[in-house]
Each structure stands twice: as C-alpha cells, then as structure tokens.
Amino acid sequence: MFHDDTPSSNTPEEDLANNRNNLEYDILTTDWLCDKVTKSEDYAIRLYGTLCNNGFQHKDAMPDEYWTCSWRYAGGIVASVTGRGDYLTYYCSGNEGIIDPEVREDLLKLNWCVVDGFYANRKQRG
Image 1 (cartoon, rainbow, N blue to C red):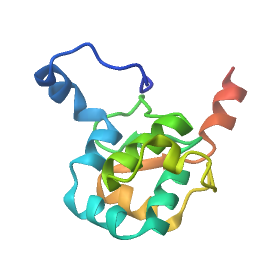
Image 2 (cartoon, one colour; image 1 turned 30 degrees about the horizontal axis):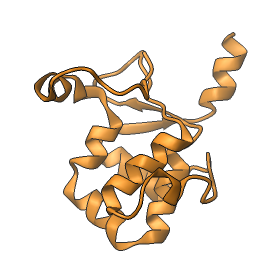
Image 3 (cartoon, rainbow, N blue to C red; image 1 turned 30 degrees about the vertical axis):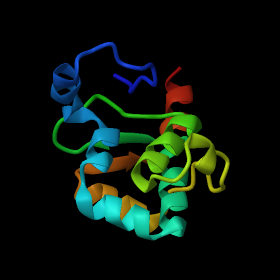
Image 4 (tube, one colour; image 1 turned 120 degrees about the vertical axis):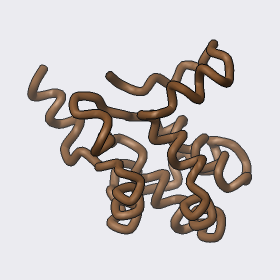
C-alpha cells in the first residue's frame, strides 16, 4: 500500500481513523518535531529533502506497506508545519532524496524507518 496524494473525500473523523499509518499525520501531530521544524529553517529543508524520493515504513504497524510522497507533497507538509508559504516555499530547495541522519533518527522516534534504496529496489522487483 502506498500513500496517495489525492485529496480525501472522507469526513474528518474518517480521516483521523485512517491516519494510523500515515507519516504526514505523525509529523503534524508531534509537538516536539513541529517545534524543531519551526525553529530551524535548515532542519525544515533537511526534513523536506528526506521526505522526497524515499519510502518509509512504520516499524510496528506496516510490515508490507510503505508511505511515500511527491516533492510537492513533501513541501506542503513542511510548509504546514512552519506556517511559512506553501509547498513552493520548499519545493526544489535542495537535497531531494538525501536522507539526513538527524531527520532519520527523529523519524525513528516516531517508529518510522526510511527504507534504504526504496525506489531502486522497486524497479528491480519490476
């Protein structure tokens, strides 16, 4: 299962129930991480870059499922946290697909793992 960037037609209650395996939701609802992103533009850009071109897996809930997002969607997530601009504020800001070690550790605290070589491995599996 992959995350879909298509806007939801669900009610807010349905969306909340469906967010159990949603990295975006976990980022947006984790106060310490939002504070870190808001206080450091450098960290915000590194989070954006890590979210781009990578697959993520929840350690406890998603043994065969992955979460991914587009560059645009990643920019939108970071802009939502910072309250600065929109997805274009971060879109193409650099390091897309580069996994930042500090961001990786922070996502692990949320029980999310970056799947190394996610897209390369998908192409090989065909």
